[in-house]
Image (cartoon, rainbow, N blue to C red; front, side, top):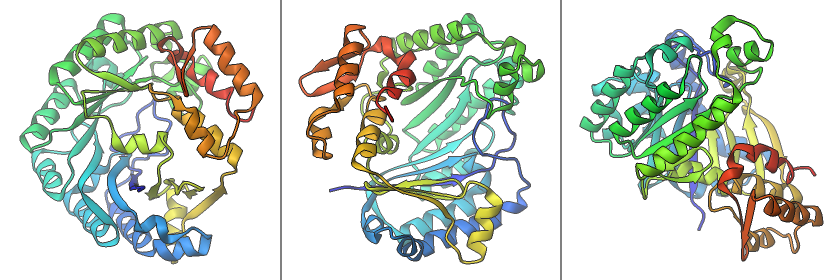
Length: 393
């Protein structure tokens, strides 16, 4: 039986990092109550909104076994507002007892008291945006916390009873060197989180720093962003280091101690159903994809007027479903099962896909064992180029 994941988007941060390409924003705390009221109304009105959109209410009847508060920095809302969200979730959804309940946070955004309140409310997993353990690199990208702040948050989280903590690290930040990167890896491992996400800085125009790099500007320390060769080496160094520390890689960017893989994120990669709430949140029921309006003001206005915030809706064709199965499934180290592809209605893979799999296999970038196809480890750094071979080809 399918189970449901719930994602709640909190689009607010205490500061906007120069590398951020998300739709988060810095606002006065006075807006938090307005946004909370909109979230609570959306949750209560989901059956009506779904009926109007032609979405089956059946997805809302599924047992919920993962919840994820993301952003942004959800902990900025404080214990009382987050508590209201949790209570409403329990009111409107069937929350399983063995739930994975994650809240994203940044060091300094939650003290020991708030962490204890979260734990008592049922939150049992924290995803902490450490990014680096070098204070110069943190200052360069506009982070408000310090290395010691990350260490303090982990200590306070352990004291509050959290036994499942994830740390984010980014390779390729301004001023980063091989030495500072290795130090960040060592410091992260010393704190012994159960999970580590290792990202490569994405250079694109959606972030201020990325735009400066692309236009060869000098703002935001763009001139001291490491080159792509450094980022590739840093990623491989991180993979090797984490493996030696006992962290198994289960997805291109994610590593975990045994049994601590992110159950919620696996729903995305395995095409399991999930419901998103909040500005810009996405949802999937196995057949349809839909998304809320991204602009916070329009989201608030829609809910205040009693209107649905859904702005995009798509029914996946068999071909699109198959493409997503490959695109998302190949991100996982276990790869994709061709027998499952047939269950999705594909008796035979498209001939050009079969040719691509054979070609990548000859190049040592893919391997096939029985019905399972996966990327080889050397392919992780060029995975996006490989994925494109299986999307809209």
